[in-house]
Every structure is written in C-alpha cells, then in structure tokens.
Length: 167
Image 1 (cartoon, rainbow, N blue to C red):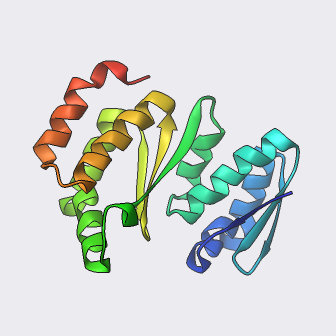
Image 2 (cartoon, rainbow, N blue to C red):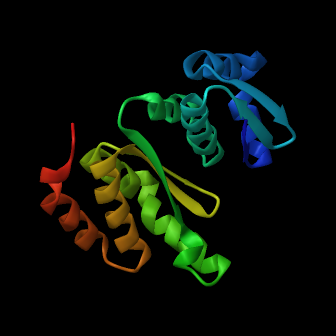
C-alpha cells in the first residue's frame, strides 16, 4: 500500500461530486483509495499502485482528474519542477509562476501545444504530464523561463526541438 499526501483543498477534487471521481479512479486503476484528511492510501497490485499514485500526485498538483488520468496511457509520465529551486523569496516565486503561466495563460498553453504535454502551475510547483521526450522539451523551456530567459528564447528553443516531439 502506497501513501500520498495532497493539499487539503485538492481532496474534494480527488473524491468528486458524490464520490464519482473516486469510483472512476478505482475502476481505471484497479486500486482502492482510502482518504483520511489529506493522506491518500492507494492499495492494489504493485504496478497499478505506482501508476495510481502518480495520478493522485497529479491531482494534488492542480490537474483536473481528466488530465491526470492521461498518466494511465502508455508512455505517459509526471514530472515536477520545484519553483523554490529558482526563487529565494515568496514574491520571486509568484513572479516566476507568472512567467510560466503568461498573460491569460498564453505561455503555458503555447508550451503545452508545442510539446503535446499538459502543464499545471500550482502552489510552489510546475507539473508536466506527457510522453518522455515531450516532457524533456517542455521541462527545458520552463527551466529557461524560471532562470530568467526571455519568452522568445524559450519559444525559439521549442521551435528548434520540434523534431524531438513524439505524437
């Protein structure tokens, strides 16, 4: 049995209205969920547990259940970037979150589209769901922004690396 702690405000998202999301989760993963406060226990076969645990983490990092369920697809993975590794104050962290999201979510959507990934900026993290190579390209573009590169530099990097994107 694996355990994952998620933010209190994300527990309701994991359970869903009338327990609907929890039931769907259990059907899709062949695992059972036990939720006590914000500690989620995942119980099932080892490989199922590992995938299910990633889905719980993704929901905890701000993804909708529908987007988090993409992790159950073949070759999909979750990658987390700690914004705190790039910021020394909470103001700097908020500014960096804004750089990754962009005006009206434009930057995040552009990176998602170019890399065929899903991105969530939540709390102190940026989370990415996608195929391995796509996540690598997305991660590098996001790291560039977090390190202070201009948006055009990150966008140029995405253009140059289109050949690495898996369909």
